[in-house]
Length: 149
Image (tube, rainbow, N blue to C red):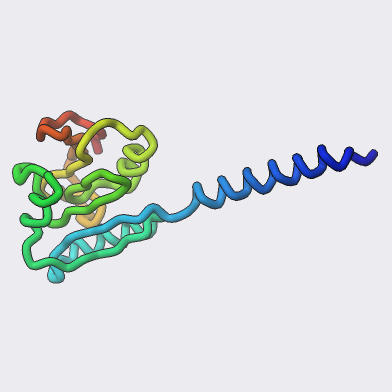
C-alpha cells in the first residue's frame, strides 16, 4: 500500500529532523581548560574528559589562580586547573558525569568545584581513594553539595 505523496514527504522530513537532532545531541561538548604546562594530573583530567566525549581545548597558562579569578571562581575552592563548559566554570578534578548532569539540569549557578586534589578523583587515580564532594558554586560564592563520590 502506497502512502500519499504529501504523507511520504512529511515522513521523510520527520526522519531527517530526528536524525539531525540525534547527531547534534552526540556532538562533543567543548571545554576550555586553563592549566599549568607542568601538571601531570591536569593532563590526566583532560584525558578523562576526552574519553567521556568532551572536546577539550587546553591552554597552558603561567598563572592558574589568575585564570580562576577572571572566571569568578572563589580562590578557597581552587585546584590545579580551571575550565569553562556550557557557560559554567568547572574547578578542579570534577568527574565528567557531574558535568553532564550540570549541563542537563542547567541550574542557576557559577559552576562546579572539587577543591584541592582528592585522591581517587579523575586525574588523581589512586589505590587509596578518599571520599570527596563535587560542589555546586553559586554566583555569590556560596556552595552546596552537588554529588558525593
